[in-house]
Length: 468
Image (cartoon, rainbow, N blue to C red; front, side, top):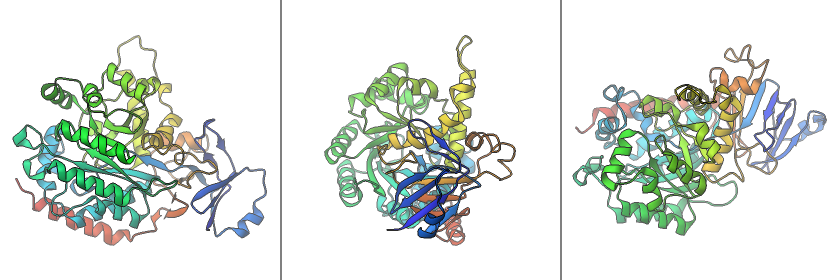
């Protein structure tokens, strides 16, 4: 049993049901869980002598660990590729598929650790990852082992592509798999790695890639497999206008109808993007509690569109945030993603017709923080253990300094508001399951210098070996 005391925080934004914010309070962590939230009025001098470790938090704003609901971590190797810097989704994919054919197990492990390090430094403690391409012996196990090494709480989603260009799909035939092999491997991964216990560090989800890369049969069989094993379902849906056009042409329906027909709605399902869902689709998702991973930076980068965030939240759609692939963002800073979600929601309202009674207050800094914490916890099915600083919850916590240059003149007025309105700093401390994995702005679990050097070597190797 190990104990950690976060002592006398400048401000704690608990994200509980009452949106409680505490000044000068402390948090006692024992064996990976939050044991007590100690008010400012209580003397903690004796407790300081008893705990294994204490962090002086008088200069920090403390929030629940941020939760990332959609990523493609291997894409860290293909950031800023010149040929796709100005491409929309389908052209972007066609430009990168030939490069990704060269992925190796080492590339997946190294890029995964780089992506997770970036997330951890942004205050993110839990991340999903959607790996859907498996050349050269790559397995999802490579990503899971990377998460174990660096200390991130992880939802590994077993992606897949089974419909290549010769069958009317988008990906080249060289990167698709046979559907029986996909289902067999997905079942192996669930049975090997998925841990449904409270505070689990590893979940596995079932995640055929998209309407334009898998068959309807695979979607149906994947849903049956997931529900037979009690795991979640994830895919891409309604990302941009080309995505909508493909679904209408191939399946003669809207994306929401496609999802409903295949059994891909419900509290155990979350879809990436959903930018182009129509009103009927929004109602369906709200009624069935089907989640969305909102990826504002990627949607802007690829010019996919603006998610009607406030409208969907008001309708009752569960929404979390995702940084999306590191080749379509091209970053993985989840605090900044929350800031961008707030700003994009505000400018999106300005583009609506005159007469709409909306404004900046429709998406406040605290609303954005809630998306990044409790929103993500709900979307990943972990609302009972993550997303709040609450007694009995997992000790996943991010701590940001309030006396930095970017927070100057802001944190003195409102440290929580400044966290989202001012430029996004890295976390000073990130704690996952009670373990300090970022200490004074530095990753503690891996040596970042050699990791970045090897990552850059592999990125060049991958790009130079591209098959066109």
